[in-house]
Amino acid sequence: MNYRSLYEPTLYAAEDVMYTLFELDEHYAIHLHEIEDDTDPILVSKHMAINFTSRLLDEFLTEWKQRKKDLADGVISKAEYMEWKLNWPQTAGPRPSKQWRKPPDTTP
Image (cartoon, rainbow, N blue to C red; front, side, top):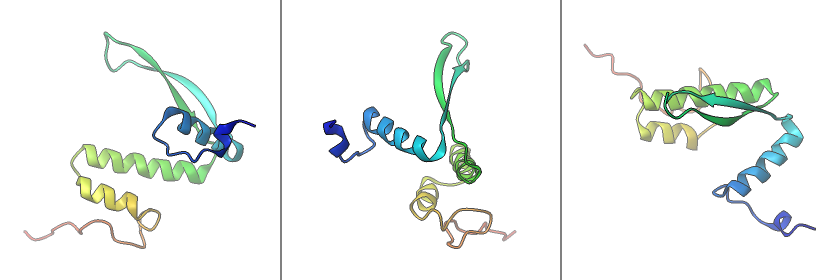
């Protein structure tokens, strides 16, 4: 038996992430893709991408991508982003059951 099977992963080491992906693959049929990152014309590199075959998981990941974009674009603050993550899934979707963001100020 591999001693790593008794190890409690922390997800801070690449090996721990891989074991988690192996487990997820048992439930979501992960597909791996090699993609080129050509954002830097001098340093073109290849990366691995993961595709899950789950519509619900795709919806969750799509919303997460949007929140990360909102944070990068300054639409939401780091505190709001953390609030969204810490209270997810109650903060998910178009009508979250838990408010995670201050309503926009509509005062002229």
